[in-house]
Every structure is written in C-alpha cells, then in structure tokens.
Length: 425
Ligand SMILES: *Cc1c(COP(=O)(O)O)cnc(C)c1O
Image (tube, rainbow, N blue to C red):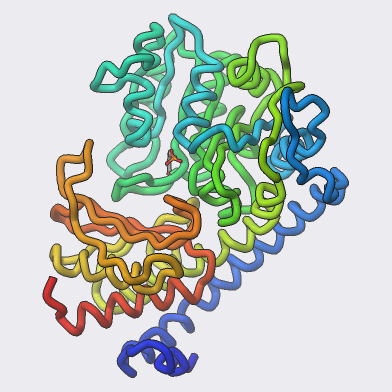
C-alpha cells in the first residue's frame, strides 16, 4: 500500500511509510479475520436490535422513580441477548468497570464466603475492593469475605491444579480476568474459561464463575457466557460503549445473579422497576450498535503496531499474527526516552489535546513514575486510542483502543518519526 498521502498533512519519512505499507500487506490476513468476526458480531447485534424492536422512544429520558422506563429494560435485554446471558444490568450510574465488578462481587457474596482468583491477583483497582494487601474501609475483607489467589503457572496459563486445590467448602466464586491488564503475560483463552468452569462446577454446582470482561467484548464471536461463565462485568467506556457511551458499566449473567445485583443497586424487593434515566439513552444504544465495528478498528490498529514495531526490532505482545482475546497491545522499548517519545507520538495523532506533551509524573498509588497518552472525547475512555506505561525497565508501553484505524496508524508513525528525529525530552 502506498502511504505517501499521509505526507500531505504530516511529515513522515518515505522509508517509514514504505515500511508501513509492507506491514499492512503482512497484516492482510489478520485484518480479514478481524473483519469477518466483526461482521458476525454486527449481525448478532442488529438481529437483537430488531428482535427487541428498538425504537426512538426508547432513547428518551425518564424522571422520578423511573417506572415504566421501557428503554432501560430494552437496553438490559439487548446486552443479555447479545452476550448470551439470561439478564443484564446496564446503567450509566454504574460509574466504571471497577464499580461494576465490585458490585457484582458484593451482590453475590455473603460473609463467610471465599472468592478464588483463578488468574492471579485481580486488576489494580480491585485490590482495595477485595482488601488484598491493605485494609480499605468497606472492603470485602471487612465484611468477612475471604479470598485466595492462584497465580498463573510458568507458561502464564491458569494453574488448574492450584485452582482445584484452592477451591474450599466455602468457595462461592471463582474469578477470571480475561485481559492481560498491566502484565507482560499470556492471555486467558475461551478454553481456559471452560476448563475452569468445568472444574469448579465439578466440585460444586453452585460455585459462581465470574469474568472481568474488560477489554474483551466483541474481540471474538462469543463471550465468556458461551464458555461457561455465570456472570460478566465491564465498563461502557471500553469496548461495549463503542466510543459513544459517555459513562457507565454493565453486569450480565444468570438471572438470579443479576437479580442479586439489582437488589443491591436499588433495594431488595424493588426489582428492576425503579431507576430513572435522567439523560437521553441514545448513545448507550448507538454505542452498543457501533461496538463490533469500533473494536475491529482498534484491533486492526494493534495488529498494525505489533507488525510495524516488530519489523523495527522491538519486542511486542501479542505478535501481529497471534490470535487476540482482548484489545491490549504491548511494546517493549529500550529506554525511557523512547517510551516518552512514543507516548508523544500517540498524543500528537489524537483528535483532542493533540498539542499536549505527555510527561512522566508521580501518580498517587504508583511506585514508579507513570506516563500516559490519551486525547479522548470521553474522559479516560480507553476504547479510544491511548497508551500508558510505568517509567521503569523494561520500558513497556501498554496501549489500546482506537475509534479509527487511521489514527492508530498515524500515531504509530509519528512516534517512530519522533524517535528518529531524536528529539530531546
Ligand atoms: C479497565 C479495567 C478494569 C477497571 O475498569 P475501570 O473502568 O477503569 O474502573 C478492571 N479490569 C480490567 C482488566 C480492566 O482493563
């Protein structure tokens, strides 16, 4: 592919553009696979919209108790149908992915129960929720809910023996994190989810298998519910929001489990009858409709970066031709300077705040300095192209998202150009 049209607007050297063209040729087969999966997912979504007879009236806001908010109910039903679950709870009032996951855990665990983390310790923001290594007021630990962590094995796969031995008489939930999070590790595949689910249910049928589905939605043509999970949760400013949702979280799963979540979100006995949508709901619907396409754009961006940077000698994870289970791409740089320049390139190609220069800073709660590049329409939305990294060796940039493939491609190229120019940081 001839990429010189980019030079009409951005100064990128000829040879880098040629290399980008070669990378895109190599990525062709992967791009086709991503498009096919996106098309299947899009068909599933359109079919659900049609079957549930989504119409303009469903987008309207409601006030007060929110009785008869048909749009709210249809949105729940849409998520449930598309994710192959019995029920779902999709709310803007669920402030983030962490809140959705925390909510689903608290709603379904009781004092004396134990939760087993089957893929290593959970995502950073959940440590305080569970009370791992700290005593956060209101944590599960404070409520007498205990936890056990089974680390991934030497191949970075779930340690099935460890999980079997870790399940006790009071284990009520087995928790799986689908995405890599901030770890240079292997992904968790559908086969792992089904194996863990079979193992847990073989020991006791009532063990709940829960998946932190953040960054995973629509990457494949099925969701963890198809692989034996009972409960999923995630963020609406990641994949399922399609880049349009201004905020929110979702929980989906077996009816009784979602009902527990509803009881906790509102009040036991009220069911799903209350909860007004004070703002218009169009973007929640439209975002979910766009999600398969947007996830595909972001996946293609990741594949392109993996290919281009590997051609230039950088270590990447996953490689461009590897199957993907989430939208995260990792690139290992050789120095702080490269890492910083990379983040600046990403920022420079952003639609918002492109003039801002990301700089490492001491973010509260982190041991090392952190650098973040994100120029997003929705604040903090990581379905939009963004990269961040703790500034320490090995210098790994974690990036994800991209509403538009061309932006990711441009960001990757501008970053290389900056590194080449050897700009002083
Ligand atoms: C983003 C993320 C979360 C938390 O979601 P927030 O919306 O940032 O609170 C939890 N788990 C994983 C794997 C994530 O990627």
